[in-house]
Image (cartoon, rainbow, N blue to C red; front, side, top):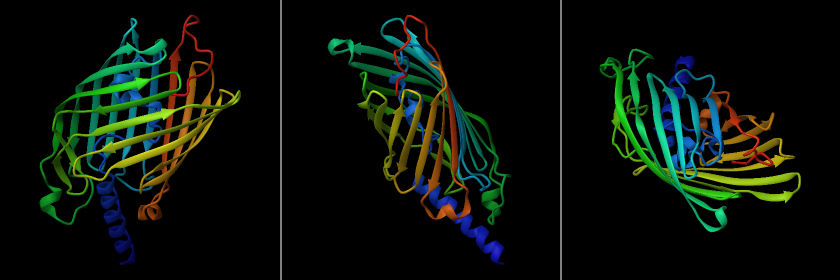
Length: 306
């Protein structure tokens, strides 16, 4: 009886956490390295071809907890145009969503060529699969709903992205279409609402060997609470980065990154849940790898911090 009660408490906590979380798109703690997935205006802004792979497993120890992967490729085409491709997968309970988006940006150079304003568009779609036979439910009317197999949902989004050598600020709507997604609270398919993403950060040179970068990421869905992420990263001797992050009413995170070579960077983040769910999981793990095709002519004097 005690084991059954514990199981029920865990399920209720997971569902209530997902509701408060209101995240219908994949979320990542190391958003500052995955900006192309947040704002299409970022495409090509690094000045060379860049490939990013990221993996996240959330609430380790709970069956059906979120698990996400992303592969992003972007680079400049000519002087003012950037292109990018993002492939992502998100699993939550019985649902599995695969995202595929092409990104386009056009950049206007402002004062002294160091400040730029980029306008971005993204288009593509995603495949939604829901297998209601996974898991156990008390109410058979819910458990035996008709499965969804590879339902295609179109995606069109836009963003504006201001950036300079030391700072950036962007606002984006990832999808203008109302579509469908799996709702972990209602255990069925619900209509997805518009998302609004605001992201920003700046870099402070503390000394020749130390840079500090505070950053934020605000997500808002009409009718739901605002979700805010804030972080502070330190770059030591252009090689090692260490940081802390906080997601409002959800978790604290520790971040670490290593610039293995001028072209290769790896990073890891661990989230510590602050809700009641912390009693039933072993935290969240997230890793990324970024490889950049820097030519000798366009090689940066030092690794860029965003």
